[in-house]
Image (cartoon, rainbow, N blue to C red; front, side, top):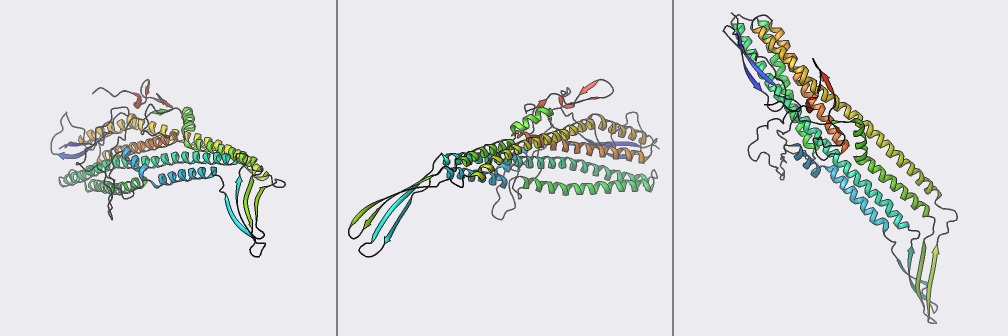
Length: 494
């Protein structure tokens, strides 16, 4: 007697809509309307350009609240979205505190550079006893010439600018770390969902195989195969839970709160992301990134330092005035002294030469930074484009074929025309394809995070209003004319 395989479908929450099933054989004749669901790992995934995924179930009231850790408590804030994590990272990460302190230190040095030397008060006695004893007091002041204090302050102010740009750079480095950790965890949550459903399929299939062996329909070897698949699914599920916990701790550390409570996070893994033009993106990165601006401030500092070195040989003047009293015979005397250093041997030649070399070095550093940023941008856009293309091909070409293969294989298996091993192999291929599709999404988001870091985008994810975006990136030929990437195609009518 042939056995009809019936199915229960498991719809994965959110965007991908991966359809998993369980297989249960019942003693019945197959009908023309046989459901092709059993052992099927997924229906077609959501278009990358489709509407945002349905919201995930919300936690109980209060679960999303931010909790401040008390004395001796291991609990901390409990954020859920990438925006909440970004705010906490900016507020709490020690790198931000260090960068702010560096700016304040540079400002203090700029204030100090313009301060005038203090006057000197002194008193002495050329002769302390006898009829000719003398006592005097005087004040001296050093006068700085040639605007040296102003030039010193201008050079120090350029250091303030550089520190402020470094603060901006630190800000986006912290944001990049928190964003990358967030989407790594989001991908791991998605993989965990798949592993849970795969384990359920493998477990039910194992139970099904045992019943078939008891009924004499299958062999003990078939049951062992199902047992192996169940064990494989179980260990992958266990390892995935360990990975989830590790990445939660990594995300907590990325925001500077290692004791923060990171639970289920919320985000759209399949959200629409824009395309970028490489050359325009390189220009935008060089224009917007804080590193070239910090290097330009360093060039200005070097130029002011050179000007300061040039006027250094101009002598400063020290003026002293005082009063002296002679005891006997009584006599009052006034004291005046003017001193200046004569630049006969030391005319600051070495420092001037060094300052000129410092300007050349600063300019070369700026050029090196621009080249490095252009190279980083090219690599980032390359990874980003490849990941987007890979995700598109999985979604549009590979996954539909793998899913259809499982459907057809299941139908033939239910009619007794294919062996169990053929069905198992088809299911395994679909499983690997679904997981590879999720991994392509991980790489896509890693590229988006890096591009946002290079462009220093406050808003994340990037939108079509971001710099250097383009309408289309590539087209793919499939059984007909060229078609646009899914992100640019309107979602189908519901």
